[in-house]
Amino acid sequence: MKQPNIVVIGSLNMDLVVTSDRMPRVGETIEGSDIHYIPGGKGANQAIGCSRLGANVTMIGSVGKDAFGEQIIRQMNNNGIVTDRIAQLNGVPTGTATILHTAEDNCIVIVPGANGRTTAELVAANEEMIRQADVLLLQLEVPLSTVLEALRIARAHGIRTVLNPAPAKPLSDELLGLVDILTPNETEFEALSGQAYSTDEELTAGMKDWEARFRQTLIITRGDKGSSYLNNGELRTIAAPTVRVVDTTGAGDCFNAALCCSLAAGQSMDEAVRFAIHAASLSVTKFGAQDGMPTLAEVNEKLTQY
Image 1 (cartoon, one colour):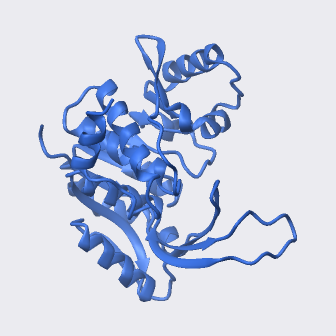
Image 2 (cartoon, one colour):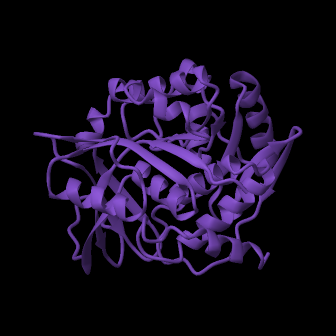
Image 3 (cartoon, helix red, strand yellow):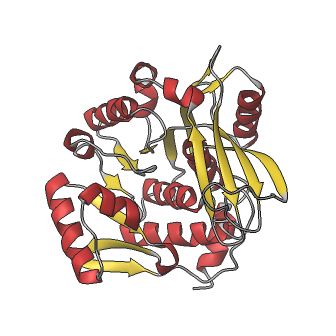
């Protein structure tokens, strides 16, 4: 299996993870039990996920010239990621994500900071790097104009693109038409399509309409149900293995990283989705989005058990 070459364009944040027994109600102040400062951001998480799975990874994004930015760059370097395409900006803070974490779930507030300065011009300056990729992986924590420019460059060079449309935002038909593989969760797909799906039959019909409209492959992540995609017009759902959940932060990022690695290595869609689900299931058994990213050996061992 060939070593994947993946370019990730996206956010780099410092995650401020506050642990509490429960979520506060509106207007309520509660006491937390702990706080951790952890490098994060969907782009950085996915880049580290790809690197842990054996890919050559280049990250394109922006941080501030501050302590958080230095820590993030150090974390990326320690994980073998090419960081010389990450802009370090004066006068702009590194992006942050404040995560309230309980035993059952988490909620997140993002302040973009330097991520908002990851411009289309920065992407265009890295066209040659994108041209050399097996897969270009994107999310929506940088400006949409940047995502659009990256997709245009990739399409011009015939580079396969994967867009994780999170956090959910309205997307233009032009942007969606340039995506090869779209990976929303169920809530994001309902927001994008403007419809609710209460049965698998309704979901199948909605996915067929979507794929016919945008000529792309749709993979919907469905939490503990697994992930679904269309195989010759039929809904195929690959179940998620049962694990002891410690922290769900970054599970979607791990899924997208693993999907890209598997596809870039030449595996089939069925193999890639199965690989991604098992990687994501391993990620939730550890605390922290990036620290929870599994290695290739760990995922392969997990796959042999199913």
